[in-house]
Image (cartoon, rainbow, N blue to C red; front, side, top):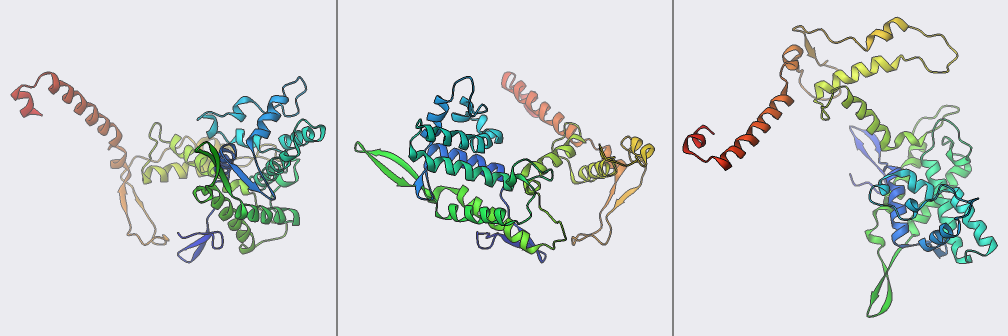
Amino acid sequence: MNVSCERPFFFVNGQKIFYVFDVPHLLKSTRNNFFKYRLTFLNGTTEKKFLVDFYKSDQGINRLAPKLTETHINPGPFQKMKVKYAAQVFSNTVAAAMQCCVQVGSLPLTAETTITFIDHMDKLFDLLNSKKKSGSKNFNRPFKNTAKQREHLLHMLEVFKNMRVLDTKKVDGETVIIDVTKRMKFLNGWMITISSLLMLWDDITKTPNFVLCFYRFNQDIIENLFGVFRNQNGNNVNPTPIQFLWAFKKIFFVNYFKHSEGSNCLEDLSEILTTIGHISPPLNNSCVLFPDKSPFNFCNLKIGTTDYRELNVPAQNALTYVCGYLIKKYIDKHSCDICLKLC
């Protein structure tokens, strides 16, 4: 697709498509590299040891960062997959607590760079994870392109452009610093995502009081949507296009007119909506016809719904697989000529 920070979009049938990376995955990748390497940030270098020293000193009854645990500092393979551990490391609470330790002298002044980096990442994640419901934090509110919001995005864009990732190795008994920035893909991911969202805001048609909730751009939304479709087909996690079509129709009609909880209005169509979820398409010889106005250049497709439902392809595939396995095991034990001919 040839997307870049300067051109984070491509065209499909004349429509501009902006390329956005999954922000939670970018945050986890940043946390992993922050723990493993040293990152140049502004005029200093980040180091994990300052976070570790703070965690060890913050073990009293009244903790400054109560959510911070050993799992956050040394996450295992499964803990690294959870976004909350990365978000709680890059949090304003941790940054403020570490700043207090610097003020009282329990952390050195060189920890300021690490503290500022954690605080900046917290604001960036709040911006790119904003939801419709306004939170208590200023940067977690829907994006309105305010001066502070745009300024921080542009600032972080420059930060990632100038950031260097440094590794240290022992060579002949001496510590050597190696620049491994070219291997780090998360930097380019952040730059493309930030540029794409800023260009998207400038490109779309906006109405008064228009806002963007960047949380809707995350991969979790798509995963939840397709998870609902899979649930409509039992244990079939890979529905066919026709099964997907029927599942989409059912979910759309059941949920589109659903009464909003807590809304100040009367329910409408209550009798229809309570029964529509139990309605199944009639099992007759009707066909599914795709209309001529389809945006795709496909021929009209006729599929008999009754015949299709009786195919039971997954069960036949499972039966063939199990029978083949049993025959193989049988031949391993009883390799007679008659059995080989039958197989």
